[in-house]
Image (cartoon, rainbow, N blue to C red):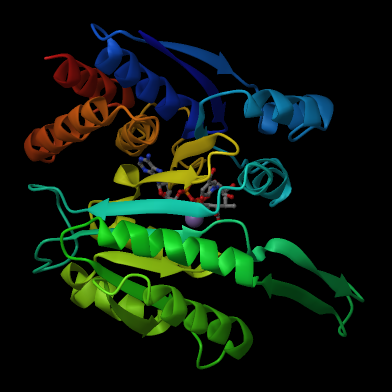
Length: 346
Ligand code: NAD
Ligand code: IPM
Ligand code: MN
């Protein structure tokens, strides 16, 4: 028998609602196996910040390190200044736990409505760099609020950081049947970072001669996400481009309510963290109408990361079957969770 020790951070808004369903499906898929799961829930997010001023205390960060993985709902609240929780909690976790591979798969499941007329087979994964780029907070402002204000956000790209994520993306491409990697950047304008990325892709690619590589400027990539998404297999890109592309990827494959992600530390020096791509959705929070499917699929990624591939696949199969029968009927958050839990046990 085996036991999993999970940290759970429901967070803000719909985060708490969708995490409850994710845990429901997790329990259901592990029922009758010899895998026992223990969870510790951490009260982090807007409530805690209002009560104590804390976003992520060091003591909590150290406790989190002791878990096998983390499941997170979403953070961010209209009553908390923008950036406080996003930077102080979510990005701090990604940086401190060295989640340099932000894995964001997109699949258009049969029967799912898409805004695209003729999408073809859509099944790709964006490998978004997770610890560098414009996200690091290397910047500053001068003369704030004056007509002469200057605001800088410097994108940090290191040879070490680029190489490790590029190598991971090549390995993922090599393990998939189509063995194709699309590198996305904007090296015609962002020449310093762009050329580091480009040289790195060329050099690391020599270790993967069976992977076909192509390149798109990020603006052109958005065209192909809409006109020809079936061309993509694995994509690799920087932190900010990857953020934007993966909301678009969600939109073409059934919506943000279906998009899962893993913040992966491939070296396993700290726990990886799994979360839906979406945010706390203040516009629908508290109504019980958020789609928990993205979180349920994130639980599948979590199980796969922990070596429970069979249970991970059962969740994906349950989602595929549910989506195939969903039609246009509106179901509540808990109803979708119940339906998925029932399917993984069946
Ligand atoms: P959002 O993803 O929260 O919402 C965008 C739109 O998608 C909204 O109309 C929302 O109702 C809808 N939506 C999102 N998830 C849904 C679901 N599961 N089911 C049905 N509809 C869903 O993005 P936003 O509005 O830009 O951000 C809201 C807050 O969340 C902000 O504070 C932002 O910083 C934060 N945020 C957090 C994360 C995260 O924790 N990983 C991700 C994105 C945004
Ligand atoms: C995401 C979110 C985050 C990001 C924000 C909330 C920091 O948009 O997970 O996609 O930009 O990475
Ligand atoms: Mn995002």
